[in-house]
Amino acid sequence: MREISLQLPHLRLAGQAWGEARLPPLLAIHGWLDNAASFDQLAPLLSSRFHIVAIDLPGHGRSEPRAAGSWYPFIDWPDDVYGAMRALGWERCTLLGHSLGGAIASVYAAAHPQQVERLLLIESLGPLTQSAESALQQLRRGYAQRAAYAAKSLRVFDTLEVAVDARRVANDLDEPAARALVERGLRQVDGGWSWSTDPRLTVATPIRHTEAQLQALLAGVEAPTLAILADPPTSYLPTAMMDGRAACIPDVRVLRMTGNHHLHTAHAQPLAEAILQFCGNG
Image (cartoon, rainbow, N blue to C red; front, side, top):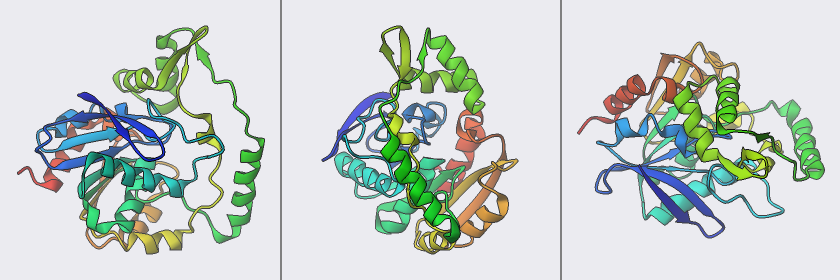
C-alpha cells in the first residue's frame, strides 16, 4: 500500500494505492464517516488485477474539509470523483463504492457513462431517497441544522484502543477493520485522540431525489454493474426497493452475501472472488 495525495482545484484529497500503475485503474470510494482504510482488507486481494486508488472523501480521514461556509449536500460528491480522476490522469476507470461511496459511484456512472468501465457496488445502489410528501420537511431540516451548526467539540479518547473498541461497537466491525479506520481517522489533541472527520458531515442534506427520480437516473448507467448486498438486508436497503433499482440498470447482476453492512471488511475474500469473476481474471 502506498500513500498518495491528489490536488483538486478546491481542496486536497489523501488516499491509498495498491497494484502496479500499468494495470487497469479502479477508484474506490468509502462510506459515510469511514475513510480509505475501509478497503485495507479487500484492495490487496484485487491488486494483481487492478491499479487501485482509494480516496478519503473531503472531510474524511486525511483529506481536507470543504471550505468554511460550505457543507456536504450529496450532489457535490460526484464532482469530487471527477476531480480525483482528473488529478490521476484517468479518462476511464472501474468504480468501486461502499454505502455512500456506492451511491456516489452510481450517480457518477449515470452522469458520465463514457468514463466508467465497470460499476462495483457494496451495500449500495443509488443514494437515499424520500417521498415527494416529505420534501418540505427534509428541506427545512437541512437548513435548520445548518443554521444551528457551530463547531462542536468531538469526543476525546484517552487511548487509541478505547477508540477502536468504540468503533467496533458502533459499526459491528471486527478488530482489524475497526483499527484500520480508527488509525486513519484520528488526530492527536490535548488529552488524547479525537476524530479528524469534519462535524459538518452530520448536517442533513436539504434535498433528496424521490425513488422515481432515482430510478430514472439509474437507467442512464451503461457500465456492467455488480451490486453485492448483505443478507439479511440492511434496514434502509430493503429487498423490494433494491430489486426495483436494479431493474432500471440495463446490465446488472445482484449478489446477496451473508454478512452485515461492512461486507468488504468481514468477508473480503469471497467478495473479492465475486468481483474478479465478474470482471474477468485476465
